[in-house]
Image 1 (cartoon, one colour):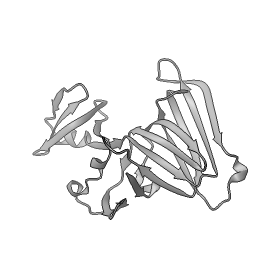
Image 2 (cartoon, one colour; image 1 turned 90 degrees about the horizontal axis):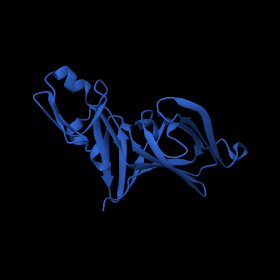
Image 3 (cartoon, helix red, strand yellow; image 1 turned 45 degrees about the vertical axis):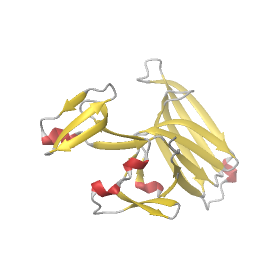
Image 4 (tube, one colour; image 1 turned 135 degrees about the vertical axis):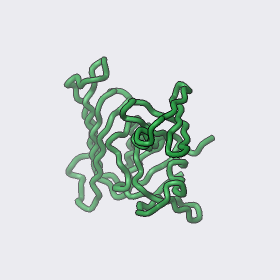
Length: 199
């Protein structure tokens, strides 16, 4: 499914990225997890799907998170992701990846744990004139940078016409030559999100 969305409606800093594919004038980056969609609504018209940022949308009516293959909440205090959850009387009851259910006893803690993230999609940049990816590779303990850097460019800066949009991504990268931290600069005419069809 191709989803039209403004790049500025996405919070990408906490993302974990996977494959990066280049072909012709296209750059595709796989978003494993960690993507936040700002308060938005989903519009379906004919065969087209669009995410439109807006204020005053009732979260329960949005259904935006449900279109992504990966959907979870994250509790930063406990450093844990929950893949199933329910909120009753303001209290969170959630299941982690190991199937363990955790019941929160405080509304404040419940609210703090409700950071919603999605993933399992592709960022697709088309009409790309230039891109530059830098990966700072982590040590074997995966906690700190090894001071090794991997740089890959697509085309040359001289190909930039000045009419393209400039996109910038930063976040973790899980694949070789990582794991590490990725910075990606892309000059492209257009951007959309592609969500793989579920089998």
